[in-house]
Length: 192
Image (tube, rainbow, N blue to C red):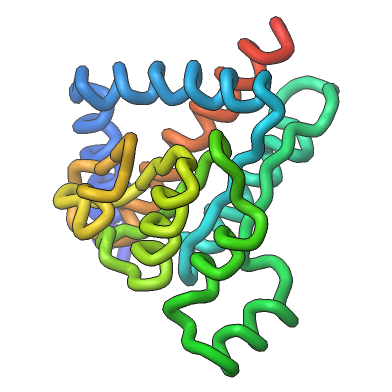
């Protein structure tokens, strides 16, 4: 069992090492910090969406902005779209699960807001539809995916495609990148 544990850790380290060596991805993270700071300074919001573990990661990252990361400061307007279970279950039941996010974006998304979708495959139908709606509303779309980018590749203004096809390793890298973005946005926005 110890060998399996070491293998899992080694895989995680390997994916993160690939991220560290990917100059394009590092420059993209830097650009995203600037984009997000500008969006907050303009009075706009960030919305997050995901499914399963990626929904938990989306909620975690939204909380880092709306709560705090390292410093005591004002809340930033960020929200995970799946947290209202009455809405989620009603829409999934009355319509289809595929529209849970797009319907909400149609109702609350505004031009200049950001929608961040976490999908390891990049093909989650409900996130794809949400990105299509966000584009209609002239929102900024940021996809967090695995290596291929899936359908979100064409719908993302910015694509954070982790160089892996292994779901747990992709999710671990999403959180690493998400935490880096949260830290740097907080420092830049609040001049910490």
